[in-house]
Image 1 (spheres, rainbow, N blue to C red):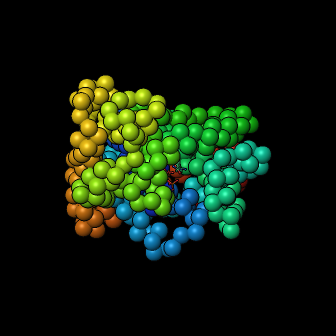
Image 2: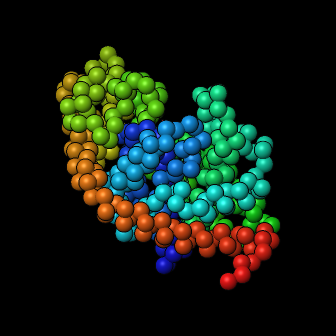
Image 3: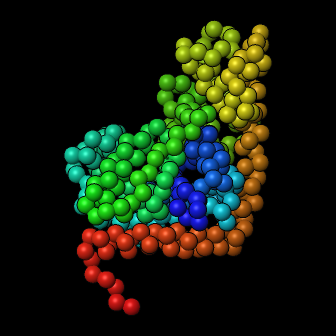
Amino acid sequence: MIDGKKVLFSGMQATGNLTLGNYLGALKNWLTLSDEYECFYSVVDLHSITVRQDPAELRSRARKLLTLYIAAGLDPKKNCIYYQSHVSCHAELSWILNCFTYMGELNRMTQFKDKSAKHADNINAGLFTYPVLMAADILLYQADVVPVGKDQLQHLEITRDIAQRFNAIYGDVFTIPEPYLGKSGAKIMSLQDPTKKMSKSDENLNASIYLMDDKDTIIRKFKRAVTDSEGCVAYNDTQLGIHNLIDIYSACTGKTPEEIVKEFDGKGYGDFKLAVGESVADILTPLQARFYELEKDKAYIDGIIKENAEKAGYYANKTLRKVQKKVGFPERIR
Ligand code: ATP
Ligand code: LTN
């Protein structure tokens, strides 16, 4: 608890350009939770170097991501928006938690298996202990809830196991976090293959809507979206492409799938796709305008970065000092 409020932690990696999936599945949920909780939203750059990065590009993407958090509507005065690498407690707690995590547990992580298959030439120890760093992120702030997509549930589970193991030995040190899975837009699928999730690392640029795509590009990508030959807008498990478009339209307009099916009764896919594209552009255009405005104001963004790193550092330090004491490190002499 901070000032009587429960604590929320979440983060995103600055790898690749954010997609509509990231926005509807993650960022949009963050916005709705930001009044109820004391929120920490991190740009998790320590995690990013588990795969090779170009240094200049990583720095630039990380700043863009941090700016996007604000452009998407997160108030940086109320939400602690910061770079993970600016708070060294993350790495320090991660080391300690490594000593309370078993190889066998980490071996089971599906993300590790997927990523090591994808980066077979660089299966580094950081990729293996990635979930421990994630546990450190969450536990440092004594987070009660962690909004994540389904793909991260396994990492949340290991975070809870590590915390419970630590608490069983040393007493109630860590809050045990709960995952938070949003309702609408839980999983946005690829526009080119509706059995696959929309992903920022998809090589097919038509498969994903990027948050920075202009209106014409958005409309064009929706026009090309893979559907089926049924020819009617219906919400079922066989018309996967249309199902996905209904989910997107619903998330952007607040209309229910039933209302949408009624709205497009008797109309062709062309009309529907155009409406979906327009509803997405209506959300992304103002977000982009805010982003470009913010990006110009270097001093303002720098101020936020500094202030929030200090705020995050204050809370993170409190937990880290407690943990260091519990495990038996000597007290600091002041
Ligand atoms: P990558 O393509 O590199 O695997 P990603 O697009 O899956 O990346 P992440 O950085 O792993 O993005 O995820 C950031 C957040 O966005 C997570 O909470 C994740 O669950 C959510 N997210 C990512 N893709 C989607 C999607 N298609 N639908 C809903 N949520 C998503
Ligand atoms: N692994 C997450 C990003 C992430 C995160 C976290 C999410 C790192 N640390 C702590 C929630 C809480 C991802 O790839 N989406």
